[in-house]
Length: 257
Image (tube, rainbow, N blue to C red; front, top):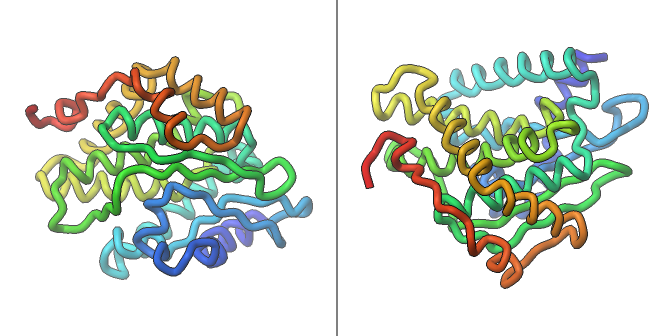
């Protein structure tokens, strides 16, 4: 049962069907959205986090690199389900709120314009969410490593938002796609700068966690607003984020102002 579930999560393609064609592949993971599916995953047919490997294709590079991502994902999901059971793939409402608040506050603290944030119910007590910020981004061999670093921090902010703002309901694999993409970007940064493996990942975690903890009061205000309205647009977002403390992320990255 567990093995078949993991294989379904790894190979499920319905996730990208929820995006418009222009958002498929590389752009899919940038949207910060989650996708869920409900048929045949367990006896209760609860919706679970969908991890579509297509969203990693452009980041991972050659086929052998994508194979490594698949194996790492398989190991990650196996361990998550071993620790928490099938609920490791769930997404409670409060976790979705904390997730989007994490994206919202961290992106703003990194100087990005956050245009909107929202959550919605996908099935019973399972929720998804979306935060729109910045412009179109990409991570390639030619992009600057400091820009890659900021993107990775903004991606990891959802997972860390859940851990910091709603730890009681944190699910180990609820945001496996964003965590894996951030890890791939971190590896690329290490390669570009000649750092030791794991150096960039450590700095990403530190910088993102610091941004959230520094702006904890604002993050919880965003959570409260999402809890009441399930959607925040401008200009209300500006009112909530106007006192945000900018993150000196270039110093965390190792650069200079």
